Amino acid sequence: MAGHSKFKNIMHRKGRQDAVRSKLFSKLSKEITVAAKMGGGDIDGNPRLRLAVQNARGQSMPKDNIQRAINKGTGGDSEDYEEIRYEGYGPAGVAVIVEVLTDNRNRSASNVRACFSKNGGTLGETGSVGFMFDRVGEIVYAAEAGDEDTVMEAAIDAGAEDVQSGEEGHTITCAFESIGEVSAALEANLGEAESVKPVWKPQTGTDVDEQKAGTVMKLIEALEDDDDVQNVYANFEISDEVMAKLADA
Image (cartoon, rainbow, N blue to C red; front, side, top):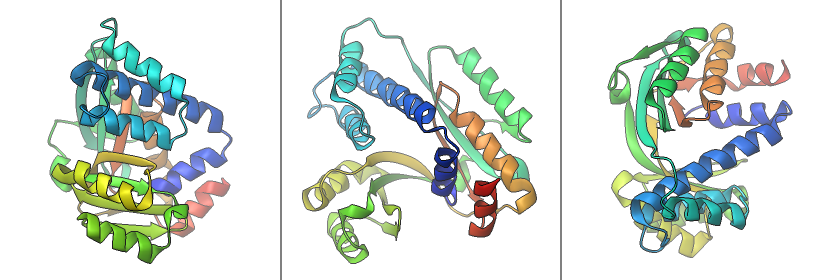
């Protein structure tokens, strides 16, 4: 989503690196465990597990942590997690999708609702904002993977639909159904990606002014800070100037 990578960087610059990293590892472990429980512990024979492990590696998660998460999923003693999608509106009419993996639906619903209500948002029904997003595959490479032309050429050859390159790296999108084939082709040319996952890509952005930008970001941060929340997607558009002011605040 527009502005979201800048938002992540602001979070990290505010001295929360260790806490953010610990929470990220916890969420990656949960996805690995669920994938292993659903499809077995064989990475080659379980596409969801392969993507989960690849994402964990891309975030420098230790091998021992990855293996423990796989063992937990295949050992028969892991929790039964339910996948739930919540949708709603944030300040300035920003559309928000929240993906949850939880062993307690009531707890998650209460927490997500509280995040929205405390930060100027409204939790809606499933489908209330989903029509504003497209389900696509997203493959992210670090800037070191190659220059813009090199990555663009590799993406075209792999069958990707779009590439966005910048100082922070390259974000490649493809059809949701072909994420496995495209990521495998890219890996052959560019090496292993930082992350490979299905995402909700907004069809259009919602402009947010300086007055509302801080509240929007507080909502996103509150949601992402919840242990049950795996992913948050939103269609906010915040100018670089406003982002810079928020980073210095």
